[in-house]
Image 1: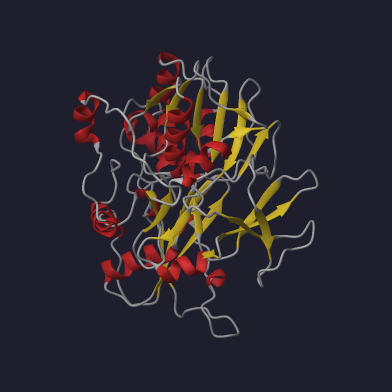
Image 2 (image 1 turned 90 degrees about the horizontal axis):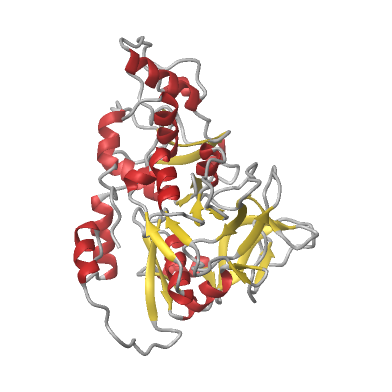
Length: 439
């Protein structure tokens, strides 16, 4: 399935990598709806290849996680809470995550299995406009949907009278709670294909747990040597997944992440006394920005290619509710951020576009001589602020004030770039709402 606003070069790479013969996209949608359904089904084995989900890669290109048919049943078993399905034939659900994300794939499998529930696929135009989304919730009487915690915070509890169940995930669900809506924090990733942990949010949590598996899943917390950690200790969250073959055409990457059927997530976790798990960060260089798991190598390769330089490092930062990506380089080059952004959008999805570019004199190293990513300096908002220029009309003033509030800055110039200053797609939605303009 091809998403709107997806980088064209990335789409073309995926087509070639998986040997794509046909695709579902917006242009084909009307024709698909006119097709008569076919009777019967294909006879398959649990270990036949079923589908692939592409995620960020370490080689400069996305990597496809190849799932087998047995994982579909694992997915369906995993999406429940204490043995109770989250959907019924009386529900109206809204599908808001991109169709090529694991969250959407799991929803589609779940609905096809249980049947009855109506699922409405929201357009990108609707998703990026909270007012249109609220209207959709009312018109379609949406009773269940999936949102990121950031979007829930932005809505401020204004979810309409029909929403009863809300599934959140893809990023920490800290400090969110709604009185009249049951919120379930779910932890999953492209490499699982099923929900690893579910937690019902019954109050505000400074560090919200991801819960525990809702089906018979073998999981473990391991130390750096691959040994189980003692109770109350932090370890890498790993679990058995016999229905995932690994990364397509990447045997070395598969060997690192999938060891004897055990997937090593790279997420550090601790088991609480009540049996629920809580995430405590990453054990490797993978970045998580606004719910998207990103390999820095893919960004670094794109920047090096665009600028024609030999060394680039990418790092993610969290600043309260704001997330941003920064690139570091040692070459003596001038960077036109606007032109570079346009070039990178040909290769990378929007959530992997950088906010900052910082020149450093030398590459920081650990005592053993290896690159020390943690030693890279954190960017400041003023790193890319242009010379201040006042708004010249009411529209410019409304936008500058809104940008400043969302980015938590004293002021924003009419020449400043929202994305270069640390803004993201979700922040842009918040800024438009804050401005009060009908854009």
